[in-house]
Image (cartoon, rainbow, N blue to C red; front, side, top):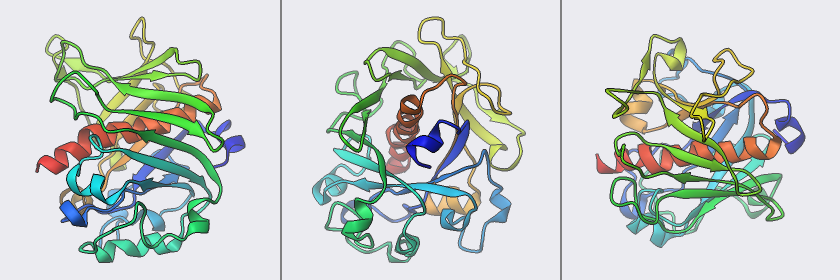
Length: 287
């Protein structure tokens, strides 16, 4: 999934490769991801140890997190801590697939100890990063965000959490490379807009999901995509009982708007990561 290839992609799956069970405090590890050229996966096809994203077909990219030991130890939720996610093209290093067996290992470096320096700097497509912020639901100041740049540091876009009167409905504003509002990322709602509306009855990982629809920031109308979903969205996927309850692995289907540019697609990958770190990783940390 190089920059050129992203121009032809209409959708992909962003799957968390790091299991977060029992990883708290000094044992908190960096969160790494793989990118799959797909729209879904079947949780029933898991191996005995749970779904291993490295074993799934069509892996075309991977993302590693860089966050200092102090930040991971004392700001365990990524929505709070200073961090950066580096997006690479190509297959992930096989060594990352073995780190789950070392869940009690203390990671002192800013990246996984299983990654070599040449792997950390090879085929970088984009970088998604943030400084320290407050968490969602605590206040309306210093809210989580992710700024997306390319390998040369050129600004591509940004995603910011939005705080308004509907505090129980999470929403994000996505800005383009000119820093203009481009998309509003928000689920459908019920009870006069006070609660989110989940979906049930889909196939595979979409049997139970919460779609965050990409909308026009002015009219709030959902935007269309060139996929079977029809509407552009970031959808949390059901990853199976083992991953949901034990490994705490998350996965998201991203359906890009039909007219999205390469820069906007890369920014939306950062948006998907922000949905995870600001909401779902924070919920896991509370539990």
